[in-house]
Amino acid sequence: MDILENFSNDVKFTKRSSPIPLGARMSYRIAQICLILKLNCSSRGSCSMQKIQTISNALFQPSEFDKLVRYSKDCSFLINFSPRVDPCVNTAIEYAVKYGLCKAVDNNKKYKLTALGRKYTDAILKDNIMQKEKAMLQELGESFTEYMIGQI
Image: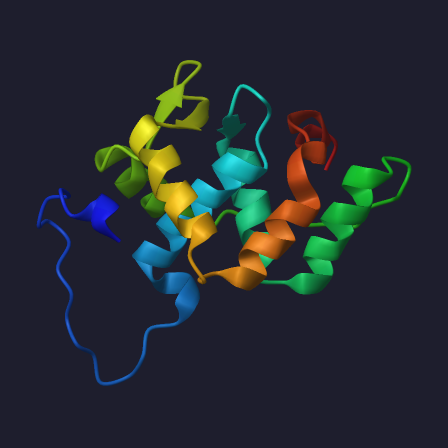
């Protein structure tokens, strides 16, 4: 993607003897967070860290993701969901902020895409990558709100 050509050379790639799991790849996590900010945030486009963490972790567990979708469509659905904090998500957000893809807003309580982040996310949406994740996030849409995070 040409969009990232101006990024600094701080990120180094090292060939490993065994493959790194998808969830531990920083570039994947950054792309995932940008998609969450684009597809699952309010019209103001900002999300709390808790919401990003909850959606990101649910993407790796389809049964948990289905619970979020059901809960977002019907708040009377009793959800048995245990959100967890994944340090990879926190690190990916730090990188995304550092590279100008998103920024902290509301006294660093929420995150929002920048113009570069929107351009990057639009390129991901047009490309034939992360199809499963894009479909899942589009299914959830903006119906999963910050209020619902507080209820979980």
